[in-house]
Length: 145
Image 1 (cartoon, helix red, strand yellow):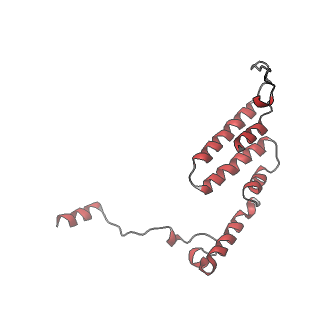
Image 2 (cartoon, one colour):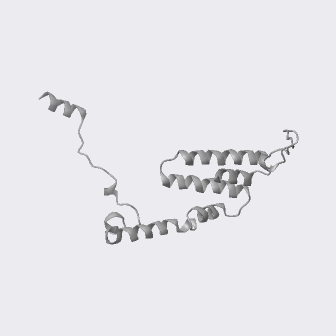
Image 3 (cartoon, rainbow, N blue to C red):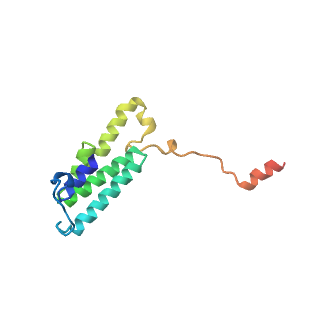
């Protein structure tokens, strides 16, 4: 539904459902589509397809923002990223990290400093798994002995 609305907003041509039944439209009767509109429509469609295939909800949000950004830029919006971010995230792009950090602090409470450093970045010990180094030959020697 959102796709149809966005493509309808991009297209200056009337949709077929809005035309009378007895009206026959041929390609010669339609005004020529600009190359920029064609490219924009294709980019928007690809971003929509990528969003639909993406399983990570954070990346889906990035695709959604990108899609709106392309549409707003095509329309000549002076600040397409700001408008897209306001619609999808409800905040200015400069405030996204501060808002995310505040939500993390609210959820973790007193445990926040255990997980995140003073800059709001995840501490390295939580995402790196340390295994003792072993070579393949050392394992084979143990198996033979």
